[in-house]
Length: 209
Length: 209
DNA sequence: GGCCATCGGTAACAATTGTTACCGTTTACA
DNA sequence: TGTAAACGGTAACAATTGTTACCGATGGCC
Image (cartoon, rainbow over all chains, first blue to last red; front, side, top):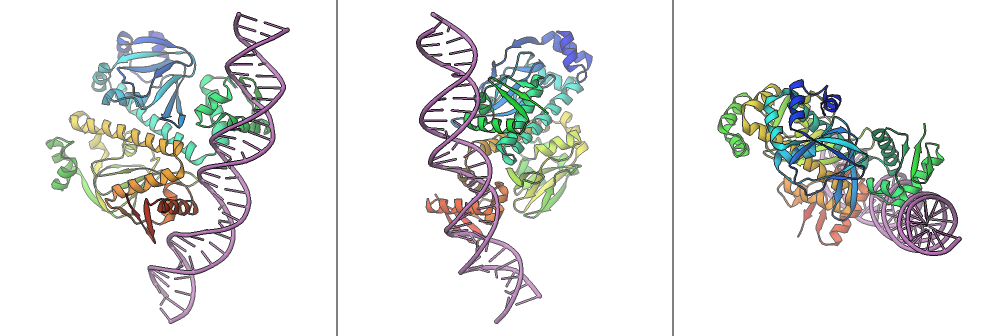
């Protein structure tokens, strides 16, 4: 556990803090597709991502859902931070994009560390700022970009967080992430293939370039 | 100055903090339409809104702009907070919606107060959380709602922050806020009028119901 | 092999939104 | 008073996105 903590957080946290994290945190493994946090849920323990990627989704009561952004190793979800601090219900849904591990930290410790460790305080603020910027990017995406651009964007991001040029997703799954429909996604993917940017196969998309 | 600070922040800050704010802050009046913060700008002083309303806009390099949310008395802009703390460029534009007043606080004081005043720390976190939720609402708006709903929503919010059922805006201005075009806004406003939800006049819209 | 669910290609059509163009009214101001 | 700019109504059309429907291919499973 120490080793993986050092690998993911060695550059952001001071040694004493990592030791303390190691002493109170519980490591939890998850599998692709696991729902880690659901909307309306109260959060009692704060997750620090050690390995893997998580997608953060927004859901409408009836109009579907939308991918906001991905979280990767060394990140935490500032939304969740906000929930913990404010003792509020979660406004977002967190789903494992692939297999990975989180370190779960009791909420009480977080507040204690805010005063005790400079590096923790800096981390919390940096997380807030990163998430702000991710949300702004998400807004830029849906407000200023067309579906074809959003789709290509999504393919690139997905490729990045899964560390593979091959994307194993169905058109339906992609449609959910973009809050669109399967037919539209198929149509635009076909266009991207004709432009020579991707190749299409059943259950998998290959990013070229 | 003390009086207006107490009126806007008396319930969130402890007395000693308000006194200290009063001793270091500079009151600045602004007029409707003033650009208070522009994209790419560095922030050296933090504004606390005493009176009036400010609209926070996101801008695309060529695809126009979009209203994210309004800030009202007793609020501050967490984006700006983030800029100050992180010494980053502003990602948003802040424009006065009407006439008002802000108290400008040197960045250095903010960090000092984080350790010194519990109520300041709580205020900073609450601001972050509020802004998160505002951003999520903005995303819900553009992702899940149609233009006619967004327009009606905009009219109601604008009515609220200006404390008037009459909205003195041109169709063009509304189109900018919604990142749409004048013709579309005129069309949908006319539809709203036919539904009996508003009445239209030159340079002014009356909210009914 | 036969059955069934999933997946994706495609067409046809509808709805929404954006674009261009034109025109009459109102307002500001020289 | 005259002129130009701003404002908004409207039509016609284009582009984008969503919806429904159908169909062949694939793969799991009995």
